Image 1 (cartoon, rainbow, N blue to C red):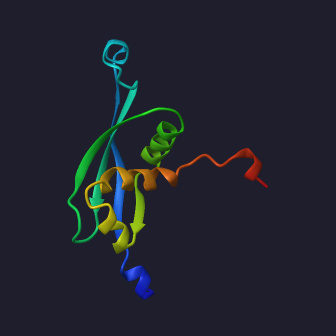
Image 2: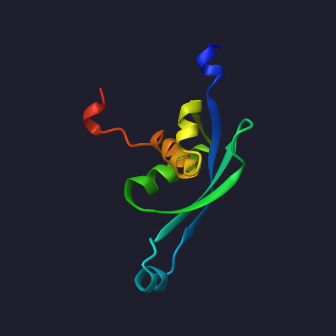
Length: 110
């Protein structure tokens, strides 16, 4: 391992549950049809395990479902990333995890 890889902060991200909103909640309350509950597990001394519920649609929902099938995504960030995002890290860790499950554009295939 390099010194740089030793200074990285690692997180496991997984989908804990998928909730489908009722038609009433979608129409009357403006909720998104599908909410995903993510579990984030810091692998180190920074951060505490937590759960975060996000309403998702489109490609983000597809990525979350692929993450659910895969089981867990590992996200690594540097210490400077953590310092800059100490209050918003949960959503940003989920975004980084979901990026791993992005659909590959058809033009990129060989």
